[in-house]
Amino acid sequence: MLGQAIDKMGYIILWLVLMFFSFLISFAYNFAINPVIGNTSELLVTSILVVLPLLITFLPLILIIKFKQTIIKSFIISLGLYIIIIFTISLSLTMYFKSFSQDKWNKFHHNRYLMVSDLERNHELIGMTKSEIIDLLGTNDSWEEFKDNGDHVIRYWTNENKFRGRYFILFFEDNVVIKTLFYKEN
Image (tube, rainbow, N blue to C red; front, side, top):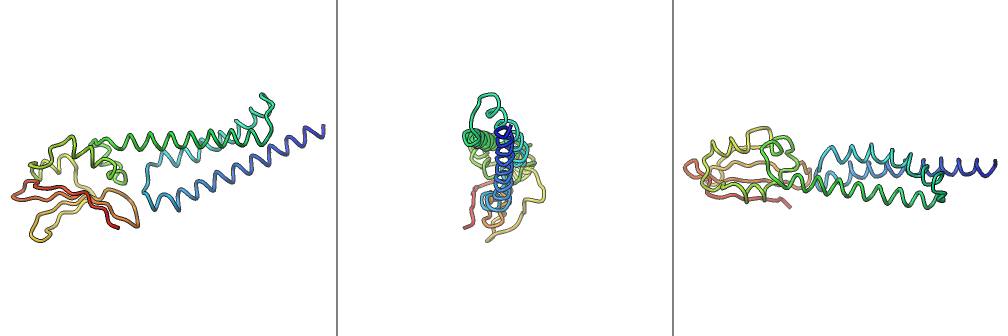
């Protein structure tokens, strides 16, 4: 009886420790990783906040009760699986955002920097007119049009990074794109 109470208490302590790490990871993501590299997606944060508590709650319990694993082993297995899940989701989202589509370009401004290579590779931007560019890339709160040293320029903001700006810049002459530039501020 005392052994079962100790096992239950150990599981509760393990659950509390893992919940603490869950909040620590979420905190690190929101206040350390996101401002530096930019937001990959709300889906990643959701997976951290939803998948982790479910994994933390049920997997150690199953490992302890069904497979007679120790608390430490169940902790290590759960944490390892969680890291694999988050890595897989993060990698999948990055791969998803590397391909350009008008819908993704207009909905996910903070991930545009991932789409620029695919956009340039699969669309003949040089030679397109200003109206064709606007039809393709849209106009919203994350673009600006201006003159730079006599050149007519449209600049699209490609991330939400507070410390380093990334811009996709199109240079026009006689209303036709003559050059593109992906610019990263230091």
